[in-house]
Image: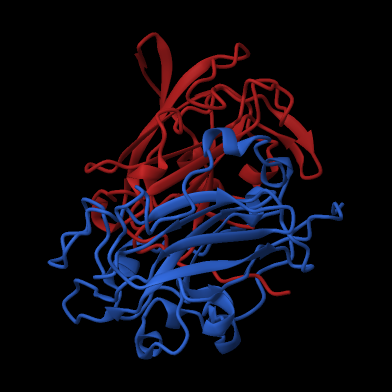
Length: 184
Length: 230
């Protein structure tokens, strides 16, 4: 069978679909305790369109391995979260620094996948954010990106926030310093 | 190993004429092709804990307070590319009310809100991949751009399949609506057969009884999930 076509998520994805822990990858649900494994951190940034204007109610989904580089091994860690951008285009996730791992594509540096959807985006966009302080030179996904664009996939460490280390990753959909996106 | 690419004609052509947001949001660079690894193949083990089952009846969320509009049931199956049912898939539906207005702060159209209609629901498919929502048929609405055009009545679907790759956000249209041929978003899909697969089938009214109209819509996710791929 042929897959159903993608269509834009549009501007009106309901606020009612969000629970209070949806942006928190360290908890499997709002009523669950966060995982005890790994270093909890904040990842935040803005989503902008051409000209730097903010994207409002863009929907972001984040998905990553646990602190040991595993999937589904830590029952207290879901590794998935969803949030929306506010009127200034800002988003925020709480997560742990993921571990690296080796799979069929090679040895992966610590990273998270981010999906971006929103008005004006007919297909979901997929990008990958790498955390600073790890060697990304051998990462097969980083290697697939032209060298000049690789810094655009690195989160930057920012000021601490409530005692947690905080990282910034801005997503520029189009124009100057456009974020690299991937096709799978 | 790369996934099978999207077959030709199924993905929307971008940017879309007449839809200015696509001109400013669509990346200028082509996406970079890469193989899917463990991150893309794995899936959260218990997504329904974070995205719990909600209400399948959007038309009467509070008993005795029905929404205004044409009552309808939308049902169907979520399948993979091999035609196998995807069981336990989280499926989200949202839509405008019968007047063509979303219960969302961003929608500032002049069409009336319906205090009894929030217009969204979340459920999971059963063991046969089946889902069903009861709702009211959404109205059409004009897109607020300089050269305005009308969106036909449509339902938004968000479906979580067994991997990152099978994540799908799409829209469903109603058979026979003359606005379908004029909709910039539906018509952005180049292949006519792919467009027709986004249009629901109406069930024979006699077969669904006297309570509501019935529409059937199957959704096919990318991937072949029963047989793990190397």
